[in-house]
Structures are given as C-alpha cells and as structure tokens.
Length: 324
Image 1: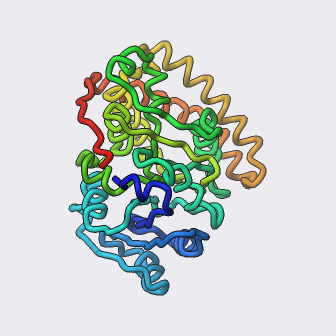
Image 2: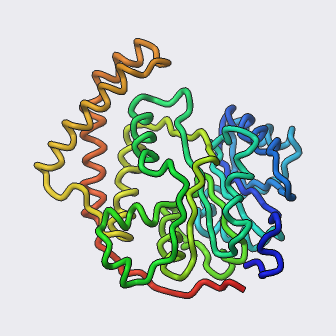
C-alpha cells in the first residue's frame, strides 16, 4: 500500500486485459484505452489464452501492445490476475474485460480519483449496455446497475455488522466488478484473489471489506459492456452468479417452485416490454424476442433457483488489510 508521503500523488497504473478470441470489436476497446487522458503514467498489458480468431493478436500487434500467450487451460481468473499484479511495478492495477469499452477518455481518471487520498480504497466502474445489446440482456444490465448510479463509498465492516445485515443488504454491500476495477497493487500482494474461475471479484470484495478496506463505486467512470450468449451460456452464468451469492451472502431469491413460476411470469412481461421498446432492434429480432421471452424468463429463474440450492452459506475468514 502507498505510504503517507505518496497518498496524495497521482498513482502509476498498469491496465490488465485478459483475452481469448476477443473479436473485431476489441480494436475499439484498445483504442479507447490507449487514448485515455490521465495525468499519471499508465501501461497496458495483456495475457491471451491462445486466441485463434484472427483479430485479437493482430489488434494488439498493430498497436504495439505487449502481450503474453498462455495455453487456454492454464488461465484462471484469480491466479492470472494475481500473477500480473505481482510482476507489475505500478502502484495501482486496473482490471478491464476484453469486451468492456471505456465510454470516453476520462474513464481511467474517474476510476482512479477516489484512490488519490486513501491507501485502502478499491474502485469499480459503472456499466452501460452496448448499442447492439440483445433486449433480454439490455434489461438485465439496466437492472443490475439501477441501484448503484450514485457515487458511493463502502466503508469497512466488522464480522458482527456483516452478520447483522440481511442477505440482500450483504449483496449490495459487497458489489464489486472486475469488468472494470482498480486495486492498489500492494493490497493484492497482501490480499490476493482466490484461485477461482468465477466470482473472484465478489469473493475478494467481501474479504477486503471485512478486513478493513473500503470500496468506491465510481459512476462517472463508465464502460460499455454486455454479452451476446447462447441459452446454455446464459443459464450457466445465472446459476454461477447465484451460487456465488448464496455462498458469500446467504442470498436465496427463489426458494420454492411456486415463487419461481411467479417470478418467471413477471420477468417474461419485462422481456416482452424490452423487445417492444428496443428502438434500435430490427422488427425480426423483436418478433423472435416475443416468441422466445417465456423460455428465457423461465431459464433465468431456473438458474437463480438451482444456483441458490447448489451450496450453502460460508462464514468469512478475516485477515487484516496491510496499509503500510
């Protein structure tokens, strides 16, 4: 962690993007990152999981961005990020997803701003759906960010305070997202990510808050980010998210089949509305959406139901944050 003498300085930054078959849109992400208006020094580094899409390596090479190629099976969301932080010489590590495009040239400066005066703050950006976002994904992205559009500092929690929160309040308190985030390098050295393939950011956030760190949500730092997924990928992601939330927060939003059916009906109506009001979608896509909405709504609720039942709540382990 930075010392008291450097707490008010502009920190140097390493921006890390893990990639795998990032596609043609990745070039726009790189251009947006490389043209950031930031007072301090920043570098961009990439670890690529053996992409073969004909776009990823070419986009990096043409922009002279250094990247390392690793076997796909050796990538791990937690461990790979820890290794990059360990090898970096910067004060702050910024994590960015390959499909998250900074909205403007102030993304980095706004993301780092709360860290200038505090050595124990980790930050994360707001997200907006891409223009091409599918209507079903559009409404989920909007609902995900709806309650968090004000600048917000989440202070440390004691284990007793965390235990006294409702499961939903715990979910809101530990919200943190490596789609676009910034963490002091020394914090990661003292408090690394868990070696996991999903939810490393939420696991870290709960542990960090309970160990004396703070988290800032930075709504002025915005990335465009949404996924075009198959129904199998959609179900798997929803299930994994709610398995993680049950483990960390004891959050079970759907605990009976009756509740699942009620929630499916309500979600279906929201999907229908999203299809009809998605102004930039073609009529063919809207028509398909109207037909597919009941299935996708049921799929989402099924993922929530089964994800919450696959595991049980795990009490947090506490270790103090080193602020030296």
